[in-house]
Length: 160
Length: 398
Image (cartoon, each protein chain N blue to C red):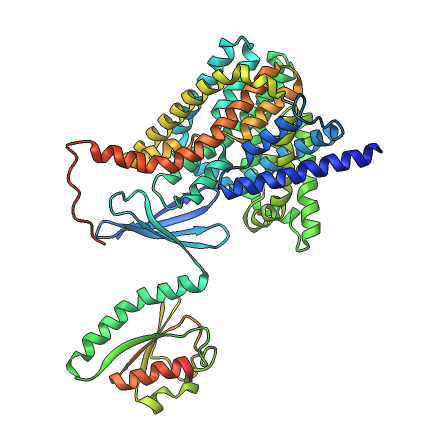
């Protein structure tokens, strides 16, 4: 895959690439740090269907969602043999009671039997995080467990 | 009434009226420049109301407006961008210059304005308004489009060309001899090269010299330096505006970003006064006789800009709709055409008809350009659809 980087004098930089389905997708980074997600039109790849301004948090969250796909796919593949075990991902929201708290505070494994196997943060993977890893807003928590346990985990992360 | 009180009241009324005009322009999302010019025409010599008291102030304020316009333009670019832009687009830049200077020169000669008039009008029709073009691109969400870098690098080339053109213009207007003219051009070329090299090598040192955490100190530093450099450049007959532009290029990075944020409101105020002052000095009764020429020039130079953009975008491997978008995006003329005409008019070396023609021309182009940019996409789309023999579109994948 070939990511093209083009300077936009007076504005910033555009980085984009062509997807296999024939769409151009990328990011325009403005001089002042603002980010715009761009997606080309189907019928005219030179022009944009949408250019969506993203805040720093939003860009990080989107990066996590996309980056986590690979991790989740691998885990699902590995747990395919074990019936009843599912992989799921949760975002740590701004109003979560465990935001900016060490993960151990939530005692997720003790309360639900679910294991947190990874945290996606700013496009990077934190593999098998320990109890003292501090959860941040926008983190994507990848958890493995039973359907029921995962439901409870979601509730814990949202409401405590 | 006390002359000071009268001047204050007149100035206040003018600035307040400009505010109203800018609000109207914002409401219909167009550039306020044509409205400012119209405002100036209405209030100026031979217009509805005669404002004598603020003429002196508006003259100096207008000059400061030009300096700030060019300083902020320079701040937007880094020297590196200018170099890559120049490398990428010099052929398109040359095509752009040739195609768009010729109509202005031709009309000036036809009207018998001589070589001086030809130089001025050629500049007026050549330079696109980077302010209006940039606004159109962002408003229509075309920043991510493939043709946008092509458009922007043509604008970069034009802005650099201004740095050579303006000194030539100032020298010619001042009636300098051929030898003296060559000398100023040589000086300005040398200055430009030195500034670009300095900016590329020592950009952060220049930035550090003016930078300050305190925004008051910072504002006074930048503003003082800009006026000093502009004054010195003007004394060397290199044109004040070019001096400010070069200073803007030399300041880079965060300092440039902060400086433009601080100076933007000042630029808006002084540039608005500049446009009004230009309109004030133009007699609205002189416009109808040149309106036909202005329309002809508008039509021809709209087509030449479309040809330029089309050609440049085609070279960059962009398909037909993108070529049309690139061409039409370049149509608007605005602040710099008025800056050029303003320089000519204040020198008193050209006829007042030229100011009238330039005003009418910019009024047309600043309005037509953004409108055309908005409608080019559906128009080209419709044309391509009715054209037979085009390959059938495959089923769209969402």
